Length: 491
Image 1 (spheres, rainbow, N blue to C red):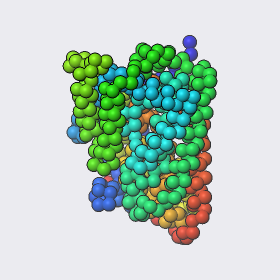
Image 2: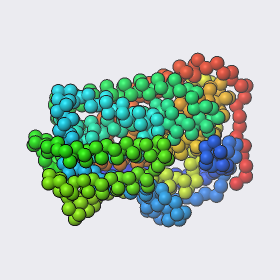
Image 3: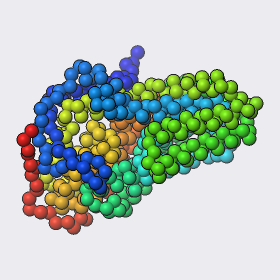
């Protein structure tokens, strides 16, 4: 019997152990932090790195990491608990809407409208998700869409992996090519001391070319799977996935009728997501407000469904349905905590700034093209440790952006290298809760996701390297005679 790839929990827990071991090997160090008004938060001060007393992380820290990844009892800081609660509430909300038959009825209408042209769902949806990624860095919000979109693709004859790819690659490539993303491009540009509009055309080009490559890649896979289901990378889960995502109705059974009440429920369903996006973009909402929104809309859906014969939901059925829906996503919520635990251990061991300082020192002295590509590599490595786009921007740009001046490279290229690297890594980063959570919802193991994705990753990296190299090559910024050195202050 062939050995199975370890589960996501095992992979992430192993990474926690690896990071804990590194805290015994890598010297502890820190940059001084100062409040940056432009960033509205504390940021590292260039030239202030100094060694500090080591704080190696032991067995207790390893065992505490998944808990501290959700909520750190030592500091009282909420880490990923808000995301986990959001996922659980979404599970309850989707279960209630599904129980009314509205989603299945809507799926039936969509499939009838696209009969013979179901493949068009892929570019339409990927462009929509990419719009969210490029404008505001759509990430955790995408988790709400898996339970909606996966049944559509399975009903249309595709597999769960196709649905996962449409969401994760659509939003992920959009973030890779961020244009006006306040959580990535704007923060990084402010930290680099340049307007975020500088480099906009290059980032727009990256967005269009990379998204086109992603759409073609997913469409080719989907067409192959629909023609021959045995070619699916999750072919052995086909029947189980049909039972799970279609709630045991089977792909060949008639879908519920599209009644007036179900149309009202679907309208409420769509309005919920419209309000969520408006709240995030314009009102500054985050996980707590979004969770409250989905809870409130669950109750409103129940009220609408309560008085209709075909969707009748009494109070007990409503509560049980909501709780069971949350239970279905409990594993996803726990995975999010374990993934965040990796960063918790690394920060507690005080090795994050040491790694950043070492990379900054290695960057000094390169020419245009080499510099920008070495920065891309370093930002790629750092993205595994700091998957948050805003967190990575605040951590790295105040240190790395000034080095661009000494390589004769415009600072906006350093911003583009940062966001391209972070977006590329977060398409498969095992420390990124959105990746591991999305795969868990889609019932796609991490190794199968890598098998599916690696050719596209190569294509995207070639596009990114080519675009950055060409832009750096045409840079007319003169190269100063000497690179800066970092000031060491006593610990």
